[in-house]
Image: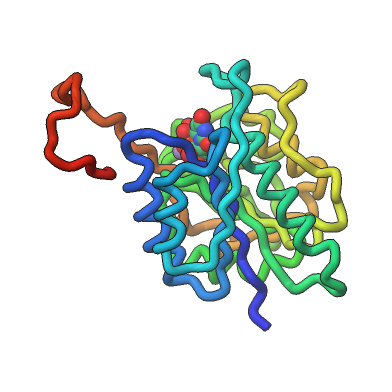
Length: 247
Ligand code: UDP
Ligand code: MN
């Protein structure tokens, strides 16, 4: 059978949230055997996301975990707890399913842009696969440098000393690897800005072992797009509209 792709998406409430999730679902709906693990950064599941998931038209698991307030500061990594909640769910779901169904996990932030070809590429991940990411690291793209089919370095404009100089959107991991490294998680303690990916990948693989995708990492199939903050300067202070409308 085609391996299932598990996409872990941390998401949080803000004016553009439903627009981001709509765009993401429109992409994911076109991918066969994709299971969406949507993890709200919140103390409880919100009504907006609950309704959205019900109508999304794809297999979806809706989780939530709040980021402790002390970690909601500029310069600190985002969505650590949410990605770990997704990992925990995945491990728990498969601990009683011998032998594990073939699967591939990747981390899909809610604001990035994903081509459909990306899913074809990651679907064949044996252990850990990597590919370029567009619009990130202060460059047009960041990418693993490949020689003779092996990753030998990183093309990046930012902190080239990172062991894995790659964005969250630039790799996928087989379910088998996730299950055989039950302690691999994203860390808060001792984690420096921009080191989440490296800290995680270090626990499960080596640079030599990485599988280059996207034509030996020469094609950009995912973009680290970021959505502009919305101008709400003209919102009335009190509720004026005749309907209470969800945006
Ligand atoms: N996110 C979250 N809680 C936050 C901030 C971000 O769950 O307080 C999620 C966000 O929805 C996205 C991911 O974490 O899916 C990465 O956040 P963002 O896109 O803001 O990071 P950047 O683009 O700067 O890497
Ligand atoms: Mn983002």
